[in-house]
Length: 186
Image (cartoon, rainbow, N blue to C red; front, side, top):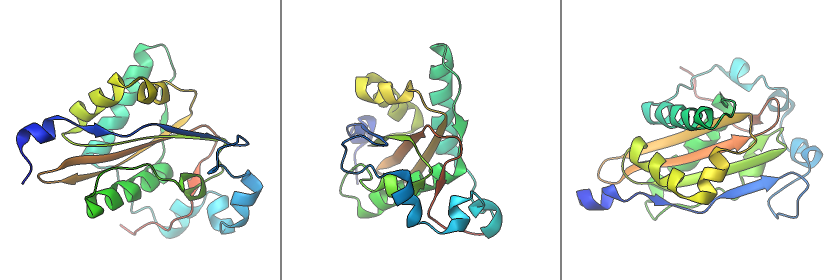
C-alpha cells in the first residue's frame, strides 16, 4: 500500500509537442496518417456510427475545467472539449494504470489521433485532480502546453486506489480531431 505522503507528490513526465511537418520522429504527414485509417474514422462519424458510449469521468471534467479556467485568466480562449481525443487519452491512462510501472508519453499519439496539425500531451500520476493540476501548472513545460495555441483538449484519467489519478492531457490544433478507435456502446 502506498502512503498518503507518496500520494501527495504527483509525478509528472516531460512534455511532448509534435508539429506536423517538423523533424520529430513521431510526426507523420496527414496524407500518410490518413491512408492507414478507415474512411469512417477520417470523416468524423465514428461517434455517431458506433454509438457514443463515451462519457467524461469526474477527474476528466475537473482537469478540463481547470485548464480552461487558467487559460481564461490569461486572456486566452477556452479549448473545446473533444470526446475523441479524450478517449485516446483515457486509453493511455488505463494502460499506465494497468502496468503500474510509472508514467510515460504515448509515442504513437500522432497515429492514434487523426486529422491533426499539431499535438501536445501532458502525462502525470498521483493524488487527485486539483493537486495533479497544480503540479502541471508549476512545470514551465507543462504550463506552456496548457497555455498553447490549441483549439481542442481531451483528458483521459484512471483512478487507482492507493496510487491516485493517472492522467493524459491531449492538446490538438486542427478543426475536427478524430481517432482510430471504435467506441464502447452505452
